[in-house]
Image 1 (cartoon, one colour):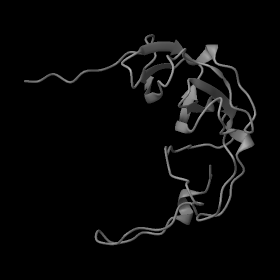
Image 2 (cartoon, rainbow, N blue to C red):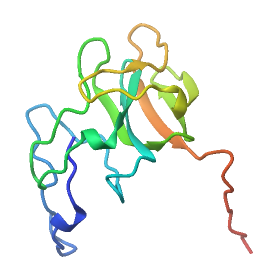
Image 3 (cartoon, one colour):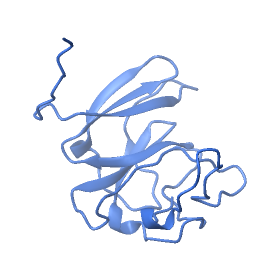
Length: 154
């Protein structure tokens, strides 16, 4: 995981390939990107979900600000128990999550029920999976107490 200032990203033309955000190692790939408007905000934690049904929240302050194009820091302990990282994104305490497995199993859970843990851990079990089953999709759900405006189709 890498955290850098948006100001470090130079503007490029429409046909350009862009600029390097992170220097990936062999076998690494980008699985999530999110914008933190205030790195010091206690409102958000970073949600990490692993393919074998594990997940965790980590304080934003554990991810130091680096230069764009660096190697980054470990966001979670990848191993046989948890598997590979499926996704990473910012969450608030009152958000919900929907997890979907490749076997069609779906579960909904509250973010506040998931422990906040350090970067070098694999987390807690979020979903019980059948043998060989993997989590393939995760989405953040809008807080049900918030009003959602739907535009009129006139």
